[in-house]
Length: 334
Image (cartoon, rainbow, N blue to C red; front, side):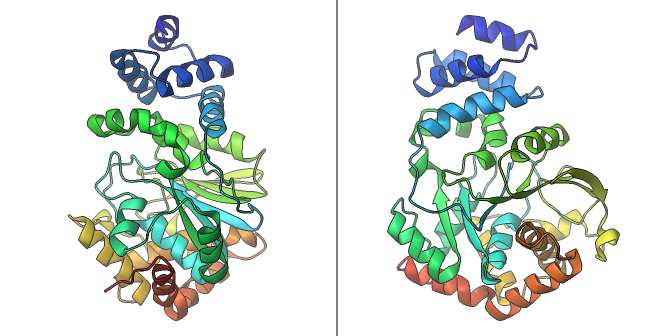
């Protein structure tokens, strides 16, 4: 462990094998807590390499519990988090809109480690009950086109660092890994990253693994399409910079996307959007992300057509599909 820490502190990237060794030390706690904190902190403040990401990921995926769900014709919609923007749950709401439009979504998520309200936090507030049961998850997919994989149920190894991550209260390299750890590994993926250098890392990894993917990074630091500025879009075979006007949409203010001060307020924002009573800015941001997700399934479809499809799904089926999903989880939204 000391040799690995010396490499990290010297700014030397770890090899694939060294990354595996380090992750094993962290997960199995064969290093001291001080060493683990030092490793996590160092990896979180310098650029991370593809070899490091893949080595860490291999260890965690080998230890993961994998539900019996097919990755075919399904998408994961998630971000790395850690952008510090305190937005409402844009990716989670967009995932629900994509499902309302009839596309299969297998969303992987967790409680917020560096934010007040992660995807699991808001879903739990709404009444969704997390489960590792494949039959229950498949029923939700069959009837509502969406199910949620709560990370702690499928990655028990991460419990070893949960308290450390929470106590640090900032984004760590585990955020970088999160969107790559879906235990089902769906065929399609829409991922937002808060760090521009991560765009290249994700592109290199996903281009070899996904039938279609999109990696997005807001030029003003968002890990999603916020419409508050231009964003980088990396997808199969190319990368480009896009502005809201290129999509026929208006620029939004950052204040317009603010999340609630409490979990209850965050859940209320999500519900209002799906009921069609969210603000124009909130709805536009959600639909922009949902449209990009729909394009992963139908790359021949224009953004405008995908956006309109998402809009129709939200108006006609957004809240109804959420209610149905929550009823399957034995609770309903009041």
